[in-house]
Structure formats: C-alpha cells, structure tokens
Image (cartoon, rainbow, N blue to C red; front, top):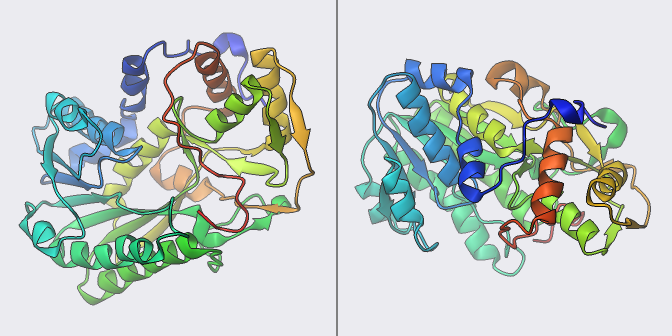
Length: 350
C-alpha cells in the first residue's frame, strides 16, 4: 500500500506548531485561485477541527498572491485561546451563535463564504439540533449571502455503503443516507441546492471523506489501538483518508468553481485503504502486535476522489507518508484531540 519509499518522505512534524504550519501551507493551485478571486472571505464554523488551519491557509494564500484582503472566522469559540491564536495570524474573528438569525444577519457582507458549520456527534441523541444545524442554518446563510459565492462542506455519508470493488461512490450516484446525521447532511445539501436555484446563488458542495492529521482522524484511531494493543474490528474493511492540508487546499480552489446549480465534488484521497493492511503496517512501524477481529464486509463508506483531483488539484500527501508520520507522532506521545471518528460505524448512529 506504500506509495513512496520511506527514504523519500519528509520528516515528521515534531510539534503542534510544525504540524499546523504544514496543514496551513497552501498549494500552488490554491494560491492562484485566491489570487483570482475578488473581495473578502468569511469562514462560518471556523472553530471546528479543520477551520483554524483552513483560515490560516486562506490568509497565507492571499499573502503569497500579494493581495491584502480580509479573512474572517465565525464561531462560538468555545476552545480556550483559539480566537486569540487566529487573531495573531491575521484572521479576524467574530464570536456568536450561528443559529441566532439576528447574529447571522449582523455578519459582514463578503464576496466569498466557506460554510463549515454542522452537527454530527450526538446526532442520534439530539436529532432536533442535528436538523437545526444542518438544515435550518443553511437557509439563514443563503439569504444573508445571496450575493456571494459559497463553498459548503458536506460529507460522503450521504452516499451510504458502496461495494468495495466499485472504487467508491461518484458524484452522480443517487444518495442513500443511513441514520439521522447522514439524512440531515443530505437535507443540508438540498437546502443549498434550493437556494442556489431560486436566488440564484453560485455554490460548490464538497463531500469530504475523511480528513486526517496527526491529532485526529482514522489513522490516529487505528494507530492508538495498535499502540495500546486493542482489537481492531475489520467489518468496515476499507476507508478513504485525505491529508487535511490537501482537503484545505481543495476547499480554497473550489471557490472559483461555484456554479448554479451547485457543483458537487468529492474531497477524498488518492487511495482506498484496507483496514487490515493499514493496521498491519502501523504494527510494523510501531513495533507492536496487531489484534484483528471479524472479517471485511463486502461494502464500505467510500468515495471516488478523481473528479475532485481533476478540478481542485491532486492531494500531495499519500498513505505512506501519513502512516509514517502518524506512527511516529503516537509513539512520541504527541497531542491528540481525543475525538474518535467512529469511521467503523455502519448503522449511521453518531
């Protein structure tokens, strides 16, 4: 499964600062895209796992293009110190509740919007919040930013399970969501599609599956199990991962591809990984025994990323690099977020 010789791979980030530097380094295509766009940028839901490095990448891309424009991040900012760190990096911040219609209406008018707000974990126990965040909020945002362009994050969960041999769901597949979260995520897409058509409003819907870095993600989940010698269930036998820096760059590149009706693009890595082979490789890298249980189901939650690679740029970080970096980070006791992805969940209950 290795896509590069280990001797050719860059060294592992040693600190959170080095990691975030990596995750916020824009691709050449992202710099070019940001340089061609006009007006300021706002990121709604910037306080999530991807938001801070995406906001920083947007600012760095503008600087690399020699352009001085505002990048504004909006969130409740419940994480201590995050708002101050973003401000130090030149990202303006606004704190508030995006479900408050008056607050949304008070936000600055800008030319470009990245929509990252959503609700996943807790969807089964708090379904009303799930639908409010994933379907009601997009309607507020579309009305507020009816004269802007929007890139809105969605999820590969809207597809449902697909046969392993197919190589992943493609953008023209009919969605088949399973569970409260996936259904609400499809509802979010439908709201954006409605307003894109009726206003009209140029949009891109990015179906992400799955972003990973060294503090969280599928590979971190697996590496932690290998390191602590916990069993790994093979039922969800295959998975997509995309390095978060690549996913960030694809999101910025998407800003110049907004359309009516919305362009739908998968944001996924170049490879589909076998959980069995990935765990075994992590065992080798960590010098730990690997305990596998169960057997691979004939289907999994998989996305085909080829269209996204063609339109938004190919990922620059492959599986061999991600695995070596993740193993090294876990071995050294690097900081993690303690937020499992639950990628192995086949019933859609989050």
